[in-house]
Image 1: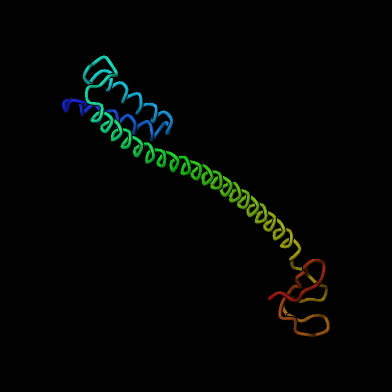
Image 2: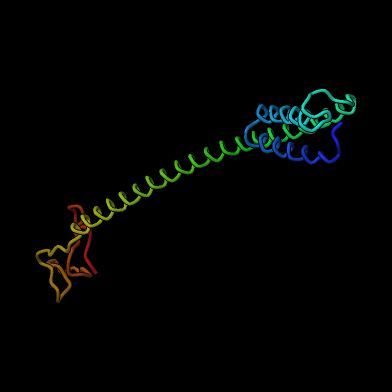
Length: 168
């Protein structure tokens, strides 16, 4: 049996096992648990410097309790580590989809700017076609054409090569 003054060793061993379980996995933490038990048995259990023990039953019970607690720590640590790996994979997928969405948004904005520019160009070109056309026989003072009809304006607007109507 391990003297009570050495119980703190198991606390440190279990902290090491917990750290390894969380960051390195089940294999290294199980190896550390068994190696720690062997080290405590060799250096701290009477007779020291040997694996022979005076109270075998108490040592086996204490060793099984230690290994059971270490096994629980390893299981919880492994679950935590796997959840962390899944979370990292999900974050990477989310970052990739975020990048894809950003690229699509940039492409869409470029298309909108291009179409807006084309629309302004077409509008400017069509405004060039919407010029007042002075028709022969139109009078600014009378607002009548040469047939004597009231026109309501002094010029006719031309759009895409056809006469639309008098300007107001």
